[in-house]
Length: 304
Ligand code: BEZ
Image (cartoon, rainbow, N blue to C red):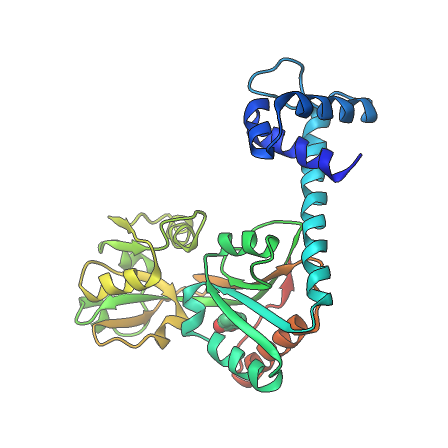
């Protein structure tokens, strides 16, 4: 059994159709059918129900699919990591969700640059879901996102649980309320959530925060990205729930208020390829925890 067999089978299982799978693999259909047959003969079990359309996997097929995918991810990881280890220039590509740029990310990177001049750093703004794909494809080496996800090819660490706050138009009646706001006070204003796609996203985290408290916002508007959400808040179109870091985005038309609910939080997740134990990542993590210690920020540091 070779990696090629795994790739053929996983593509067939994903497409559930021999013609489409063969097209995606850039081969003709008869050789694809032959390879699947060879695989079944070698394993001595049926992986797909004969003649099923769309293609249906047997129980053994489902088992094989899940583990074959894992092996393919590991093989891709091995290729990226070997290139990385062998490369003389040290590079670190960072994927990040926009909100982290208003919080500690700039300080973390500044310190990293000061201490490790020879590492060339690049930045790529992307959602957490996009980060996972980019890690596997070797386009980034570390991602800072907000969703926990579940993927054996990715090492994830919950760095901390960041409090959520409310962004309101300046002059909004709730800006005059003393102290923190209760979630139940936020139902009457149109709620602006982001990003609209890809899902799941921070938008789902915010909507779940309402749902878990059995609250239903009167009107929800989904927008493409954080800057648009905040712009619309400034224009008086509604309110937005955002991570506390956003207080770093100073605007004259937006006011921020804390939420009176310690469970209303959004995690900051560090993600890297499971195999990547490079010194750059260890140095980056050390700087993050150093900053948390200096600023007395409570952290979680839990590997998922
Ligand atoms: C933080 O705010 O805790 C953070 C932001 C970006 C990267 C790592 C941590």
